[in-house]
Length: 285
Image 1 (cartoon, rainbow, N blue to C red):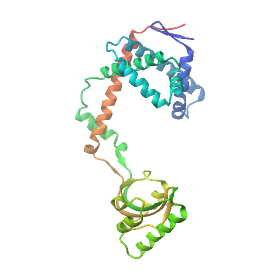
Image 2: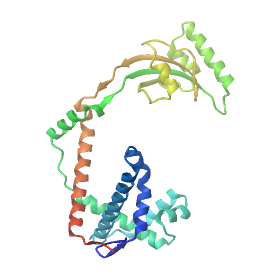
Image 3: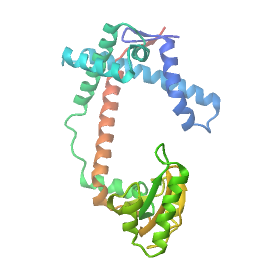
């Protein structure tokens, strides 16, 4: 059954296209839901998305601000470049008609500017709101354990095979065992000698797993044995360790303000769409 929104017909095919667009993320998010209920809800959400998109586009077509042709042309050429040519561009827009594609681009730009106007003049979040958000969401500002480490690395690549890299790293290890200063050995042997091989503070997951497994198990001041990662051979030294902690309010205040502004903008857009919907004539035919 088709829908008519303010006289504009929406075919079932448009809704099913939206279903397939949403399906991958939707099914991950609601994996535990009964499949029949999940499918029904997905269809309902897709239907609502399409209706809202039509209402926004209809309103944008009435938008007073005109988009200069040069901006549309520039956007068209940039999209064509991103798509790697006409073939993919045509597929993305569902048409090979250049005029129609440019009309779609112009409409999209009008929508963006209209919604920017809707969100304009939003007040700055209050200090109390920032503090309240921080207290309610401290978990998201928690940092994992951090270590400050340096390494000597010999990469394995088209220039250096595994045997050659291994021989070099063993020479570096021998010098360290004979009392050479780590930073001096870095300068002499490492493929990444900058800052004495210092990587600064890192958290788990920032480096490859094989690197984390070694570095996070070193004591402060300890130098590792030679170990291998997908990049080559390494010797690491641990300088410092910081336990997991929650970042302070002042440190994350800017992030919170940005998030609260985003929430206010989303609320303003939702209210704008609700107003469009309250005035709309939506029929099933």
